[in-house]
Image (cartoon, rainbow, N blue to C red; front, side):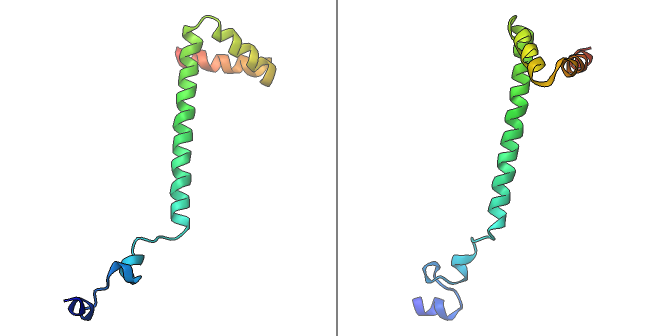
Length: 92
């Protein structure tokens, strides 16, 4: 029977023929998929952190001043004022 299957053109997967290489893909495809997956995870995680910070600033009394003072030290008073105006505009 084995000779019959080989005569009909079917090869065994261990022979290294076309059946063994069907699952291989170009090197770029897995890399692109992996990059896309990490970007989606990073974007989703970043969005979750921003949402968590938003809730924490509005629920925990000391969190708002801590975040505001830290941002003032990093990006400046005028930029924090613009950011606060934008945030309050979203709330309204």
